[in-house]
Image (cartoon, rainbow over all chains, first blue to last red; front, side, top):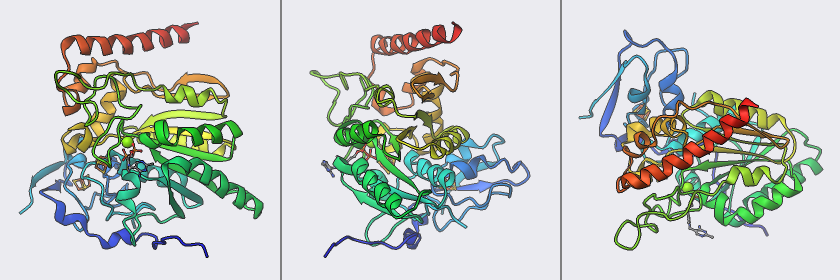
Length: 82
Length: 287
Ligand SMILES: Cc1ncc(C[n+]2csc(CCOP(=O)(O)OP(=O)(O)O)c2C)c(N)n1
Ligand code: SF4
Ligand code: SF4
Ligand SMILES: [Mg+2]
């Protein structure tokens, strides 16, 4: 018999990576132009839908700061996550 | 709703490869089978019994990734499935070195496989060892900086040219910092039949010694300095798809621990090679 280790699709979601975070992103919707740049680059894909204001899922956000660094309007700032 | 590559994966904060994987599934969609080599890509996404992939996925050895893909596509076509795209995803160590023989065979047979290399220029998952993709003078744990050695002594292997020499219908290079370019090239590759190759420049903040928030901008600098050319080979013809601003290579080096030790002479040596490449291609464009 063939043997292989089989995992179920998408089950990595069980692993909440939010507790890795040291810094957290704060989005200022007054400055955001909904360009989608942060949403496109977030390595976790947890900033919501392109075309809408970014909404960070803090269950997974690792606090890398790429969204803040890439935002062309400087609408995202990082602060210590307490 | 999340992508077909889900959160919860174990990539380091700021990982460029994770960005590449999101770009890949978003560009190619559901009708794919992924054959993935060992490496960070596999380790971060499929710690048993979990998986971050929402598409059919097989993990196999470095040595046989393209061969397994050739088998998968042969089986699908034999079943009458003429639409599913079989996609290899492998790191540079897998592609440039360990699985290179099987890659060459798959390309030479022109099997109906889309091979994607995410290039982070070293064996990251085992602790940053040099690969033949590691650039000249870069520090890795097997190209140390000390009295006897000053980083890697060899040039980066020109893999895209070697792939193109197999006369495959499509071979291209792109970079995570240019999501529209990645998307365009992957979709173009998907629409072509036969052996296709796309290499995506994907930063490794951990291995390169870069602040996590710079994960994307460091990859962009590789393109802007001309260190990573954006190219397309179609039926033997090479095209530069993006003209770089040609910032000094030092701007790229100074943000990375792996290049901190470079002497002005070494920086000048690399700048000269980069200048040489662009002088040749800019001259080629004019005629
Ligand atoms: C034949 C073989 N040699 C070595 C290893 C150990 N190994 C596991 S992951 C890895 C690094 C792979 O590097 P790369 O393909 O560049 O992917 P990255 O980790 O950088 O994403 C190595 C050497 C292995 N699994 N199999
Ligand atoms: S800090 Fe990083 S992980 Fe968190 S939302 Fe921004 S890009 Fe995503
Ligand atoms: S070591 Fe590098 S490639 Fe591997 S998960 Fe971390 S950042 Fe990504
Ligand atoms: Mg690698």
